[in-house]
Length: 102
Image (tube, rainbow, N blue to C red; front, side):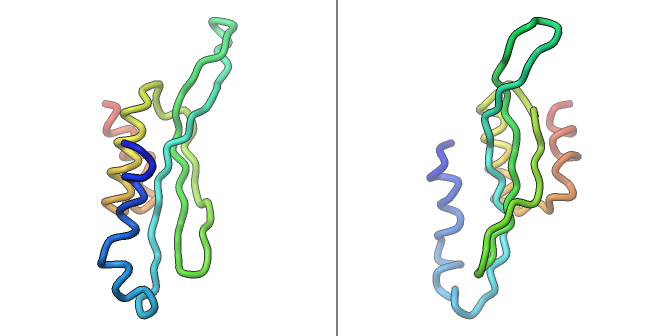
C-alpha cells in the first residue's frame, strides 16, 4: 500500500469537518526500510521496521521505533496500515508484531 493511501485516513470528513473544535491526537505507523549487517553471512541485507509518530494539532513527534520487524516489505506496510487505521496504542505494538509473526 502506498504512503498516500496510508495518509488518506487523516484527511477524511471526520477530521476536516471539526478540525478547529476537536483536539486531534492520532498515532501514525510508518514502515521504514533498513539495511542490517549479517555477521553469519558477512554481508548486508534489507529489512523493514515500523516508526510510530503521535500527531496532534500543534505538533508531530516520534514516540517509538521497532527495528527489523520483517524482510517482507508488503507485510510491514500492511501491518503499519492496520495499526494506523485501528489506532493501536503503541504500548501494544511489540505484542501485535509477535502475534502476527506466529
